[in-house]
Amino acid sequence: MNLIEIIQGRAFVNNKLMNITIYVRDGLVQKIELGSVPKIGSKILKLPLNYIILPGIIDMHVHFRDWELSYKETLSSGTAAAAYGGVVLGVDMPNTIPPLNSLSTIERRLHEAKNSIHIDYWIYSGINQDLKEIDKIVRSRYVAGFKIYPEDLSLSIFEKALKIILAHNMLIILHPETHMSVEKCVFFDLGSRYVCRSLASMIESAMYVASIMRSVGADRKSLHLTHTTYYDLILVAKDLGATCDTCMHYLLLNSDNEEYGCRYKVNPPLIPQVEQLKILKALVNGLINAITTDHAPHTLQDKMLPPMMCPSGIASIEYAFRLLFTYVIRGIMSLTRYVELTSRNPALILGLEHLWGSIEEGKLASFTIIDTKGYGRVNGPQYSKACCVGFEGREYEGEIAMTVVRGCIAYERGVGVHKCGSVVPLITKLKSPT
Ligand SMILES: [Zn+2]
Image 1 (cartoon, rainbow, N blue to C red):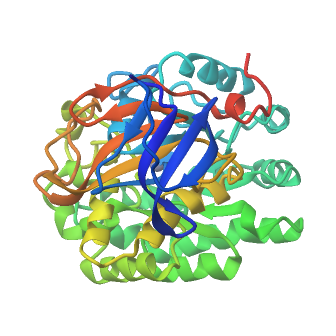
Image 2: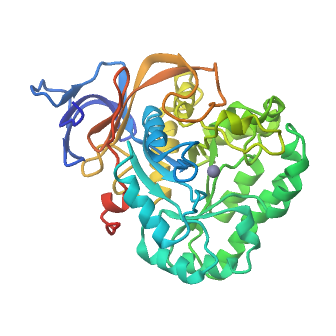
Image 3: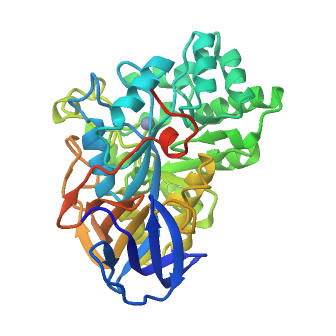
């Protein structure tokens, strides 16, 4: 049974857990009834009391690779890993080979994704130096927004490109660092990369983009700073009216870990412990809007290269949201905050709050179901092709029992994964990809 018509159990609705019956029709929550009147049928899911149904997790920063990088990850393996990790929607970054920065590659990506994905899927576009191409992408409305990399800030067309994107109120998701700091850092030893890829360069890049936005009177909420690592950068994001996210590896690992080798090499680099504690504070007190994984898989061969040559990235989508839920079980974070960080706020930032982000009649029947009595230990990749996770051996409390994507069981503990995904332009019916 992969398609569900009725789910009965404890669900997080209107900021509290309540015993309800959810009726699913055409992938949507058709009706919610209080209590659980016994029903009979083959497509009824009746959950035990220790399970909770949460609005499905959205990971708004992933790298599912594929194409010429399919030896590292594919749309199929990446979305299977995401389903195992409790994720119902993943938004993919454009640094694929070839890159997602032309309408034809974007159309090809969405078209190919339809047949291979386990969870729902969307993409960001990269910057194209041909401004006509940017205009075409913006008008197609196929993408969640545009990803800005440090090197984009130095392009002669950058300001013009940004203005085209902003004129259509599209989301700008910024990797907040300057190209100069990235270049300078190549020769720094592992463990001290945070010194050269500095807070100052992060603030500088955010201020630069914000100044262009101000000059055209753009909506300040169009700017999102991804994988923020410093409390002071988060304060700058707030001052600019921007939103921001961070990743679990900045909470669980620090620059001392980086000294142990390339599997801890990530961009922006891991930070010293004192900064790490401040990030946890910002996460719990609400300054950080979302948690992302920046799931960036690499092979063991890649990660065995010398420190200067090995690629950056930690592939944590299978465990990140289990590890975050451990904070809820241990009383460090409220369940409300967990749902805000993983579902409600990502849906708002992506402009998808009419379909995702809460359990409500008329929204998608996409849920992350957690066994609150479950527990486990990070034990290497399960479905991802990545060599390593970055948190091996770490214990977590609360186990993902099931991932439901529009009424379809994409992952079930003890059973496996199932292809339930579609692409966002089709789901939201903005426009069908070819
Ligand atoms: Zn990334």
